[in-house]
Length: 627
Image 1 (spheres, rainbow, N blue to C red):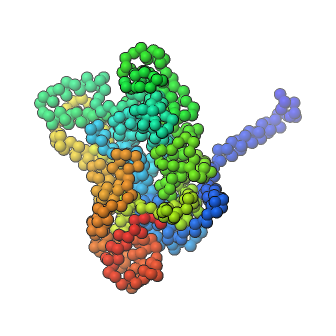
Image 2 (cartoon, helix red, strand yellow):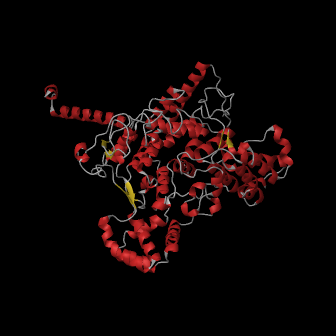
C-alpha cells in the first residue's frame, strides 16, 4: 500500500520492485561468498600473540630457519618423509616469492599427506585386527583413507564414527569398524571420550573419579546414549531360520565345510546393531547413596546443553521390567554425536587443536592429550583461544588448519631442545624431537627411489572381506551351501578372496617400495616399523619414539641400511654418479640424507668411501630427528 501511494505508474512500480529484488540478491550473494579469514591472516594473528607473550616475559624470539631446514621440516610434518634430492633442489632453486606457502599447499594436496596422516589417525582410532570378533580392519582403514583423500571435515568424520551402524564389510561403511574394534561397550565409551574430547573418565566406569568431578553415575548416564549398541557377526534370528537346517547338516557332515559356511555368512551379516536407547542401568555392585544396583538412569551429558531425546518409555515404567531391559532404541547415539561435535562443546575443538599442535610443534598447547579439563586453556590461554577460532573458522578442515600452522613464523622458527636449561615458555616454535617410526622407514624410500609416494593408492582398495561381501549380496541360501561344499576348504577360503581382491585392485607395485601406510592386515605387520616404535594400536597414542638398543643395532646393520649403502641401482647411488669430485659427491649425500649443505667442519670427510658416508649419516641423530 505504501509503495502504491508513492509510485506514479505501474512501470515505475515494476522497476522499483526489480531494483529491490536485485539488492536482495546482491546482499545474499555477499553472504554466500563470505570466505573464512585467509591462511596468512590467521598465521599472522598466531605470530602476533606469540610475539606479545615473548615481549611481556622478556624472552628473546627465535631466529627464522633457512630454506633447507624448512623444506626438510615441512616434508616430515606434512607428508611423513624427507624430501628427495630432486624435490629439495627444486625448492631451493625456486626464486619466486611465496615459495614456502606454495610448497605447503602442494604437500597438503599430495598422496604423501594421505599416507602420513593415515598413520596418525589409524593409531588414534586403533585400527587393528581383532580375530575373536571377526573384525578385519580393512574396510575401516579404507574409510579413514577415503576421508583423508576427500578432506572430510573433522567434525563430520567424528559424527559419522560415533553414529556408525549397519554391515561391517559393506564398502564405504567402514566407520562401523570404530565400534567393532572394541568388544566392551563401556571401554569403547571411555576411549571415545578420551579420543575426541581429550577427557579421561575411565576411572568413573568402576567408581567415582578420585581426582576429578566425574562420578560413576555420570559415566553410566553418558553410557545410556549408546546402550545396546553392539557388533553381531551372525545373522539375526529372523534370517537365521533360513540357514539353520543347512548349518546343522554341514556341521555333522564336515567340519571344514561348516566353518566355511559359518564364516562366509558372517562376512555378509556382520553388522553394528542398535542406536542407543537413552537408558542405562547402574551396575550390580553399585555402592553409592545416589542410586541402587540395576537402577535405571536416563542419558545425560557430562557438561553443556543436554540434547533432546524422544524416549518411548518413562524411567518408572522401565524400572518395572527386568534388569536386562534397557528400553527400545531411539537413536540416542546420534544425539551423543551431536553433543560431542557441537560448536558449544568446550572440549571438542580444544582437544583436536591440542593434538595437532603437539604433532606439529612437539609441545602440549593445553595439556596432556588424553587428560584435559573443561576449563583448562594451557600456559598461553590467548593462543589456545585463537587456535580454536582458527579451527572453527576453517570449518574443521584439517588441511587448512595445518596450512595455518605451517605458514606461521612460529612454525618456521628455530627448533629448540627441551632440556633443564630451556625457557619456561616453549610455545614460540617447534622442539627438537625424534621422528616417528613410520617416517624413519618412509624416509629411506626418499633415498631409494625418485618417487617415494608412487604406490600410495588413490582409490578404494578391496580386500577379501569387502570383495566377498559384495559377491554375497547376490547369493541365496543354496549358494552359500554350494560355496562351502565346492570351495577350496577352510584354509584357502580367505586366501582365495584376498587373491581376487588384489587382482581387482590392479598393480600395487613392489612391496619394498610401499610406504608403511600401504600395509594391510594380510600384508603382515611392518616389522621394521614395529621395531622402531610403531604403535601396536592396543592403546590410544601407543607409538613410542624413545630409542633403544635393538633399534640402534638394526639401523646400523639391518636391511634398510644395507639397501641404501650397498645397492648401486637405488636413487641416491644414481645421483652421486653425477658428481665430478668428492666434494660435489659429499654435497649430494648431505642434502639427500640430512637436507642441508655440509658444514666447513665436515669438509674433511669428503674423501671417505660413499658407502661409509651414507652409513654414518643414516645412523646420525640428525637423520632421525626434526630440527
